Image 1 (tube, rainbow, N blue to C red):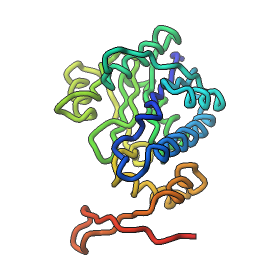
Image 2 (image 1 turned 135 degrees about the vertical axis):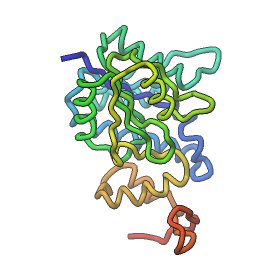
Image 3 (image 1 turned 90 degrees about the vertical axis):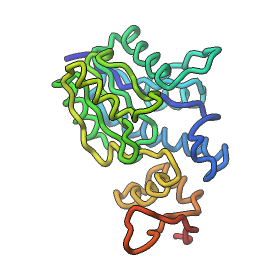
Length: 247
């Protein structure tokens, strides 16, 4: 059985979720990030198919929380020049290879609010039979989960200037003759990136009976807007309205 390492990069709390600054203050965004982290870390405590689970972040508060959930916290290295997201992921992937002797890595992100332990087990199983396992993000043609066997089977394409990461990764996998699987999952593919996602997240957490989650409690207490259909003939366009008070 190959040495399987789970990778979770987390942005510094001072820079987290910048696209949501028109919804929340910096302090609220920090609270949201911590809620997201606690929810995901709680799920990972019920996932035993990985040899190690690594959190990569420059923020001491996140690294301290990681230890409380039996995750390995590694402080992100400082660079004088600004790093691209691909650079950060490459650093983390290389740490897994060099320090933890990873034979396969599974990269995940903090804002997968609907993901379940079963999703992790299924992806881990798929990676045993493939060089690459990709879960596409629901809305963006991006990637929500990326499994690589071996870890250097394909580079990162999150910072590609013109092509979404999911499309670019599949294109390069085919070009290089890699055996890959697409993990098609709504729950594993839904993430929070922009205001629209945030508003849907609140509703989805209720639908999936996840109202006990820290993220749902935060949204219930802090989110004062919701989505409504723009008109009866169009299911893809919404307007944002004030949310009614709920008990």
